[in-house]
Amino acid sequence: MAEALRVGIAGLGTVGASVVRVLAEKADELTRQCGRSIAVTAVSARDRSRDRGISLDNVKWFEDPAALAKSADIDVFVELIGGEEGAARQSVRAALDAGRHVVTANKALLARHGLTLAEVAEKKGVLLNYEAAVAGGIPVIKTLREALAGNSVGRIFGILNGTCNYILTRMEAEGLSFDECLKDAQRLGYAEADPTFDIEGHDTAHKLAILTSIAFGCRISAGDIYMEGISNITQADIQAAGELGYRIKLLGVAQATETGIEQRVHPTMVPTASVIAQVHGVTNAVAIETDILGELLLSGPGAGGNATASAVIGDIADIAKSRPGFQHGPVFGWPAKELKPYRKARMRAHAGGYFIRLTVHDRIGVFAAIAKRMADSDISLESIVQHAGGKRSDDQKTVILVTHETTEAAVRRAVEGITRDGHLIDKPQVIRIERAG
Ligand code: HSE
Image 1 (tube, rainbow, N blue to C red):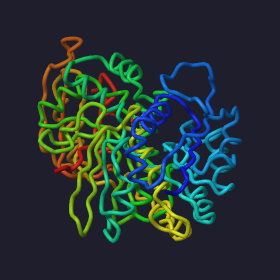
Image 2: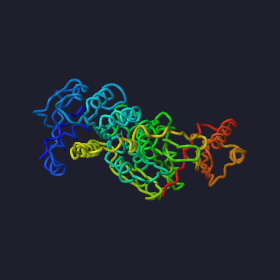
Image 3: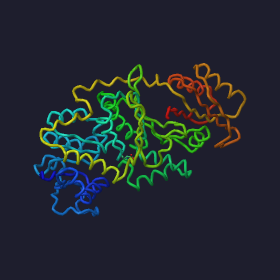
């Protein structure tokens, strides 16, 4: 049997500890599957004395993750530190430069520096595996890179952040406040170290940037993503969505259009009957539409120690199974030097339906003024409903509009006009509607 694959792990938080534990528990199965054993030989973590419930006997400790990354004691460097700069970036770069394979769950790092890191990995002939970086335990990277080779993707969209989906699900099902749900997500180990990364859409954007590159064969361009988070979603929106046959999800969407590729992250109305609307709690889902296969939906646990560890271990096992001389596939499915520049579609050209919730003064002419602004912007309305829900005073009414397909530019123009008319009590709420089967 071949020699053991020696693994060094930097970062022993929820995910790192799960990886060490599962590698020990599943040692026999993994050895039989890979034809060699997998041994954690070295680790690096901030707090050496903390009880993580795992055995680290005979494992070498490194204070400096970059020193571990370069160490001759390991074949694979597993980066679970997180963050797009600092120790994570330095240690991954050091490992690749030293000719070590790398496994990482770090979406922020890949979204910002993935192209450079892929070029180094491909030059050195080592693997840079990152299944855990997108959608937790769902094998979406393998699916896109390997199973869907030859397919052209038209649209890829999904629920990519477990924390947001957990919050939205519980707000709807239990009527809880946003803050209560966020605290529970943190307690359960789903949220990022800084949860604003989750709730303001950054985490989804990082994952979407990676998916876009593989799906469309273009360079990663995280800075070009239109982004809105869920922190301004209220019970009023959730209830109105339900009444109209929709559910609110934070989606990341990448879509080929005539003017380029749209990349957007925002709260989205999806039909309650659609499959993606049935994805609840910390579960993630990715829908992929291609010319050959048609529509595919993958769903599964999107965050948490074991889900993420499952993807990390799959990546380590792929390295254990690889042999010298085996030609590794390119990191983003296409050789890094052949990735096309990203061609950005204009957000104002985005076409789709819109949900608009307005809190207005209850007086004569308001309804007519709103309808006129819509007509002036060539917006056709599917429905317009007025009710007293969420009323703070007798002078207040809620007006909910659902448009037929229109453009972002037209909706912004109409909403600016309505705001200027002076009938609004609160900021207007605009939520895009996404076509979903
Ligand atoms: N904070 C992330 C989430 C963890 O909630 O999905 C997985 O990337």
